[in-house]
Length: 82
Image 1: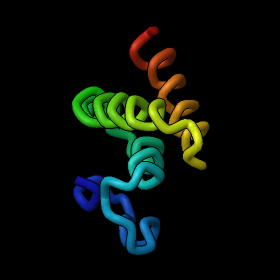
Image 2: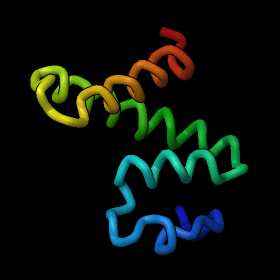
Image 3: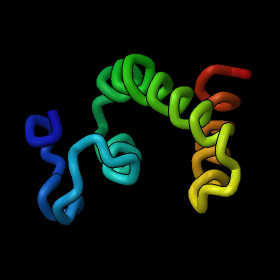
């Protein structure tokens, strides 16, 4: 998917897996294919962020809790209309 849309995964990911959150968010901002962005966001990103937020909610001492919570709230408000 990344290569098919001209996204330089190897240059950007620096060894991280393709499902690494910063890679996904950068890709969504990179690609101009709005249908792909919508489908990817609805089928993967929203579900993944909901699961991450739920897990991090249980452990607010985690250094990344605030980041995950912020991204989740943006998605919940701007994407899902919550």
